[in-house]
Amino acid sequence: YLKIEEKILFEKLQQLKDSPDNIQLSNDIDLRLARLEYLTDKRSLLLNSVVLRQNPNNVLEWHKRIKLIGKDTKEILMTYVEAIKSVNLNNAIGRVSSLWSSLARYYENLNDIINARSVYTKALEVQFRTVDESANLICAWAEMEIKHNNIDFVFDLLSKVLKEP
Image (tube, rainbow, N blue to C red):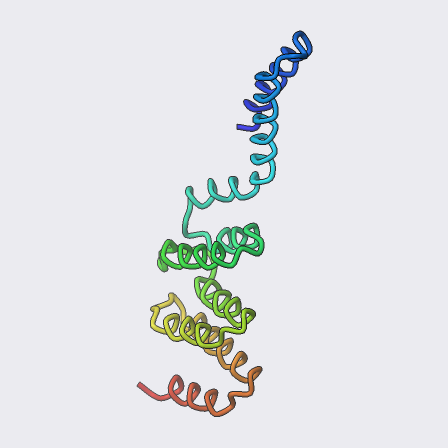
């Protein structure tokens, strides 16, 4: 897209040299410049979309996408949800649990401990490929609760998950 826009813009600029008083052409150039700027700004995000379309099970690419979004809370949360729904546990490249714990940390950074707990609770219902992923989630949850001085909650949590089946 960038190459096409650059080529069209170059041709329009050549036309503007021949007729500098053409207001419609000048407006068209402004529009093309804005479009080119938009594409340039969104290039990384667009490339990431292509990579995720090719393999939606790439956990690392989902994390990159979240970083590329910036500070738009609504968009970040929607991306986390899309990532969690899109990644197939059996075909995942990377640790799927990292998406869950990252989402919980995001809520924690927003001082929304209730939603962070909800994320951890839902994450522990998932059947991950390895026990290690579940253990990492439990440890992350316990660390969050300790950070917020919820020691009794940590004891309850650990006693639940450490019970023999």
